[in-house]
Length: 432
Image 1 (cartoon, one colour):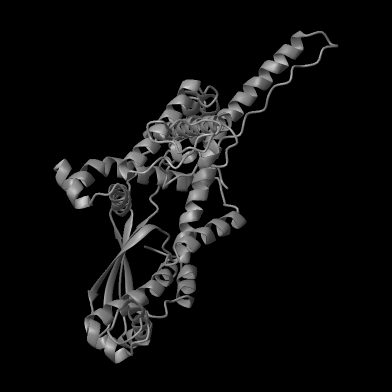
Image 2: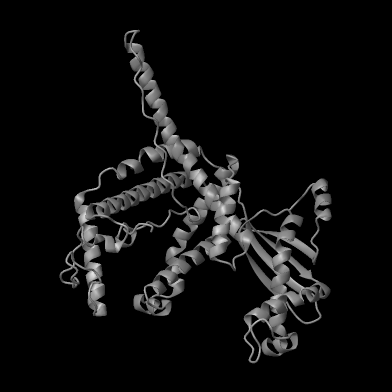
């Protein structure tokens, strides 16, 4: 990697505080590798930080968590564990400085390897990270307009909600509650107008008992809420599909190499999501794999094309955001970051902020792409209106046209379409 003398001088002024003898090598696939070492003195300076972390994690008989002295912790976990924690603490601070020093703009999570770790010796490491590949985008606005014109209009997708669709949700809700009560051996917990308990076999939603399921004054109000949920579901699915169609058309006209680290990260996310779904259903992931007679490696091989596509979409969205100079609303960015940090208190603030920023930029990029179809429709409407006006007598007014409808908000997950929310029983309850 080459820099101008001016950049080199700037780099020297921002040299890392800890690492020494660092070097950067360009790898294939838009990746770089940083190698270096940290002195034993700097390792020692961070030992107390590692000890404090271990003190909070390790349980020691006779001491409250977080109260055990260093000597007890050392005997409990051993010197190698302390060295490992110290190395991780150092590199956590060192990595951003290394990026600044070597003027590296990374994407995705780095792959960090500690290659030498021994008492009273420098710690040696390697860091492999992906960098933004060179992407020459096609005329993405025109491609987006074409793809949007070929896709279903999300607003029209939610216009017609049949009574049969609402009836199906009502029936499923009644059946689910009945089955739950049969499994528990209890009555439905609902009462009739006369105050008598309703058994599972008698259970039907009516104006008299619907209020016991939530803040509903009538069965008609519940049906309206269900219809609204179904409408939002249909609009969301159509929006996701249109966005996917837009990205597939751009991908088909764009050629670049996706860093392997990004593909592996997408595979990790897909696997993690499946594990969570399986465990939430009450099964172990190990038994699930046995049941389908596949290994995790088998699944990842099957998912690799999907993972590469997700990574490719995210890189394209990054490039569009850069070329269009998009920036998220800082107030929204900070608010959403704090919301996540309140829910996940152990998360790293900068990593959370970077994640939220990416999601907000993705949404802005998608809205920009979707707007191409709206702009085209508006131009066609204006042309037609002008032609009609020209054909009318001088005393007639040109016909007014409706403005394009705004698109529905959706969340994007690393460039992929957001998960759909089922319009089922658990959506029917309003906020208290």
